[in-house]
Length: 476
Image 1 (tube, rainbow, N blue to C red):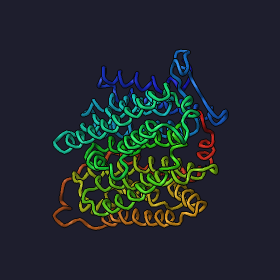
Image 2: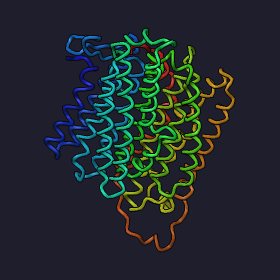
Image 3: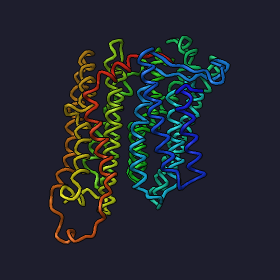
Image 4: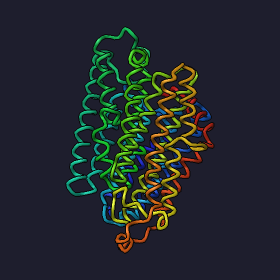
C-alpha cells in the first residue's frame, strides 16, 4: 500500500471524510493532506520520468477481471498540477471563508479525489465514476455561494454535467456491447477505422458529452454563471482544474482507443476551439462584472486546447503545446480568480468600473492579476508564451496559417480585456466613492494570488522538464 497511485486516491477521500466529521478541523486536514498528495504526485512524476509508466492492479487483480491504475507522463503532469494548484488555494480558502463555509472542505476533498481517480483510471467505466464524482462535487461547491444567482448557476451546471455524463455512459455501453471490454489497453488494438456503426456512434456521444463538461463553445452556456457566481476559491478550482479533467479524457481517448476514428473528425474540435477563442474573448471585453470577465476568459482560453487535435502527430509538438497550455492556464486562472476575490472582498463590489483606485490600495493583488494576464496574453517568458509558441510551431509544420493568425488575434483580444481591468485600476474613483469604508486585505489572500501568478510566468522557464515528462507516454 505504499504505491503513490493508490494513496493519491485514498488520501483525499480520508481527509474529506474527516473534514465532514470534524468541520472545525477541515481546513487543516485539507492543507496537510494536500501537501502530502503534492509530494506523492512529484514522486510519481519522478518515477514516470525515469521509467516511462507506472501501473497498479487494485487488489492484485488487473484488467480485464480487475481494475488497473496507470500513469504516463500526461497523467503525472495533471496530477502534479492538481495538487500544486489546490494547496495554495486551500490556504487562500481558509482565510477567505474564515470558518463560514465548512462544507467547502469535504466537497473540495471529494473533488480532488475524483480528479485523481480520473487521471489514473485505465478503463472507461471507472472514468465515468470519476466524472460523476467530480461533477457532483463541483455543483455542490458552486451552490456554496448561496442566494438565487449561485443556486440557479449550480442547477444549470448540474443539468450540463448530468447530460454530459449520460452521453458518455451511453457511449461506454455501446463500446462494451461491441467489444465486451472497457479497458483502454484492451480496446486500443480492437478499434479500427472500419469499426461498426455502434462504435462510431459511441465515440460521437462520448465526445459531445465531454465537450459539454469542458464548456467548449457552443456548450459553454453553464460556465460563466457558475464560475462567475461561485465564491472565489471555488471559481479558481473549477477554472484551473475541473474543466481540464474532461479535456484530459478527450485527449486520452483521442490518442488511445478512438485514434483510428478521430482522423475523420479532427477539424471539428479545432473549429469549435477557434470559435471559443473569438466569442469568449469578445464577451470578456464586454463583461461588466470582474469575475464574469475572468469566467469568459476561461471560455476563450479553453479554445486553444482544442486547436491541437488536427495537429497531433509523431513530432509531439501539438501535445507539448497542449500540455503547456493546461499548466499555464491552470496557474494563471487560479491566480486571476484569487486576485478578483481579494478585490471583491475588500471593496464589496464586483463591477469592473468599481476597480478604480485599486492600484494604490491593493498593489500586490493588482500585480498578481497583471502577471496572470501576461500568461493569458502569451507574453515571454511566461508559460502561456511557450504554449502558444509551440502551438504556432505545430501549425506552421502543418501549413495551417489560419491557426497562426487565430492564435495571434486571440493574444491581442486577451490583451484588451486584461488591460481594460489594469487601466481601470489606475483611475481615481469618484469623489463620493473615496469615502467608502473598505475592509483591510488579508495578506495570505494577496500573496497566494501573487504566488500562483508568478508560477504561471516562471513555468515558462522550466518548459523542457514538462516536455520531457509528456514524452513519457502510453501507459493507458
